[in-house]
Length: 150
Image (cartoon, rainbow, N blue to C red; front, side):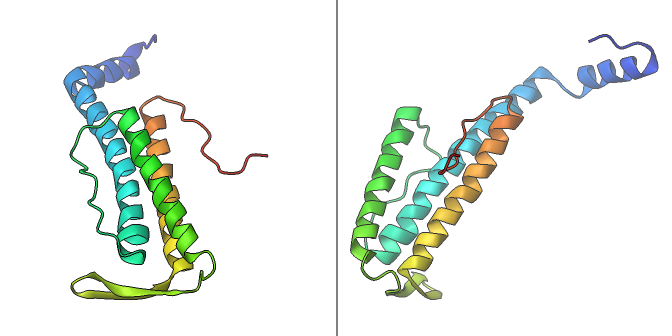
């Protein structure tokens, strides 16, 4: 990039003084870490609402501080798929069935199976959108993740 004059000097000064390579790398690693946390958070939300709350499971959550690789993430989401197949089988004839209880000691919740399903799906797409935006900011072109393609 060729820059001349005052504008060029201020740009290079900015790069020298503000964009230190260590801070760029630290920011990059933090964003990659945040992407991983989003993905594990999505899986944990399925466990929390569809599994533990609606189905009465007692499944442990994935540790968002753990370092995982793509094969582990794939297995985690295979487990989420199995959970959602169980949820779907259980509530397939009664999507309006009441699901109620204490989600937290101080928070009583009453909804139905369709509400739980809608919540976890909306939640996934919200965070997946954030993750795709972060990937773009990191210079990657993420795949098309739309469910329906035309």
